[in-house]
Amino acid sequence: MARLLYTVLLYLALPIILLRLWWRGRKAPAYRSRWRERLGFVTPCDNRPLWIHAVSVGETVAIAPLVELLLARRPDLPLLLTTTTPTGSARVSALFGDRVQHAYCPWDLPDALARFLHRTRPRGCIIVETELWPNLVQGCHAADVPVLLANARLSARSARGYKRFAALTKPMLQCLSQVVAQHQDDGARFVELGLPARQLRVSGSIKFDIETRPQWLEAGAQLRKCWGERPVLVAGSTHDGEDAALLRVLEQLRSEFPTLLLVLVPRHPERFESVYRLCLEAGWSVARHSGHGESASQAGAVDVYLGDTMGELMGFYAAADIAFVGGSLVPRGGHNPLEPAALGKPVLMGQQVFNFQAICDALDNAGGLIRVADETALARVVRELLADPLQCQQQGAAAQAFVAQNRGALERLYQQVEETLLRP
Image 1 (cartoon, rainbow, N blue to C red):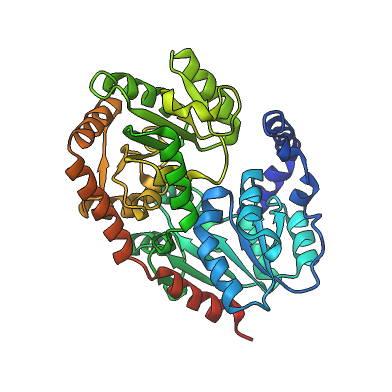
Image 2 (image 1 turned 120 degrees about the vertical axis):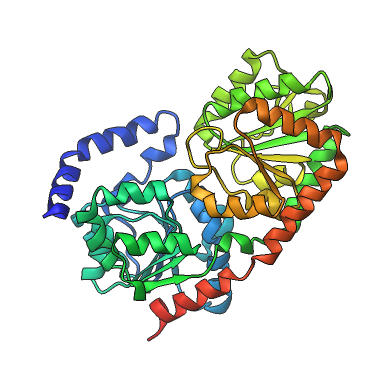
């Protein structure tokens, strides 16, 4: 009954959902393309692919090591990757080209999902992290498509939200074939919400299995050559409210570190232009990585460098002296601190890290992360690190060692995928 009511309400909301898609297309036109795929009208597949669903950029990057492993070990296995955002779609294309198929995941409507499953005939489904939808899971279960939730995480805050809708949550979790959780605490929350304990495995986070790519280091070296000999604070994956705070941090530090360069890399491309205007209105000179506006070639003489392109964050982190990971000074839950940590950078974050709580706690204990309460504390910590290069180097080394010590989850996840989804 609960799922029936949920479905009726979702159908009633469909005109609003379509209108919202059109509205988002005003700033990001890609939202208006291929919209029929969101209703299940995808290109038919005749090769029974393994379906992997990653919501957007973060989930796509997180699952990329598993995709590469599958491509290497099972070259005969077709892969279908779905996302819900155009930026996720672009990331799939950039990472894998034509080695995988891509489609937008249909909305959680029974007829759209039935159409999608009929056209794609997947042999199994991997859902990345926590993108659980009642009709999607139930539709796969009814069609005998096993579902594995990979690299699963569930914060205490999210668990409370799911608990409020227990009539929907418990039956959905019971339809999952396997949950491979990042941490024991994540797994315990899934079980508390109704997942049968026998369907739970804890593997650690595959984010630890990040490999430092030569192209990231090369990109970082090129940026440093462009910027010259000056201290660099890179703020990655920033959200609304954080960019202004970081500009105020820059203002506080400039008297002591007059050549300090702030690199802002907004999380969402639709914010590139507004962040650029924000910097100019605050009186700072700005260069854009895309080359729009003031030439990026003048970056050595500017106050702020705007990373207004997609897929190049690791190159910016590679060029940093200090890395701040966004989504953490505002209540967004934070983004992945292991990306700069793997590159040996000292990592700073705010207190809003509930999406990566266990990882942040462990990285903090290992000496690779400092969490700050507000922009004043952030300015103080950046000042201390810039004034003490040895401390800066030691914190970066501790962060990198922490990542290296925790690798191995990828292989454990791969074995679960083989056992749950790929056995004849």
